[in-house]
Image (cartoon, rainbow, N blue to C red; front, side, top):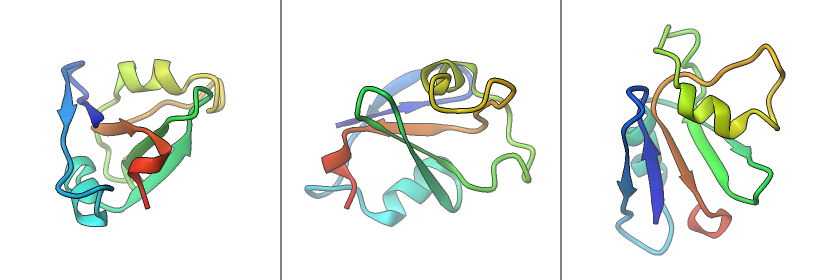
Length: 89
C-alpha cells in the first residue's frame, strides 16, 4: 500500500482497488496528469506533472524524500503518492 503525502505534511495510507493502482486512482490523488520519479530506495513517487504550472503549494516532506534524485534547486509541489514499483503497472 502506498502513502499519500500532502502539502500540509499529513501522511496517510493510500489504498488501491486492485493489485496495482489504476491511472485514475493516481490522477485523483495528485489532482491531474501524473509524473513518476524513481527514488533511491527503489520506491516510486507519483506527482502532478503540471504542478508548478498550476502553482500548487510546495510539499516540503516530499521534497526531502526526493532530494537525492532531483536537482538541488528543485522542489516538489502538490500532494504525492509514494509506493513500491510493483504497485504501478
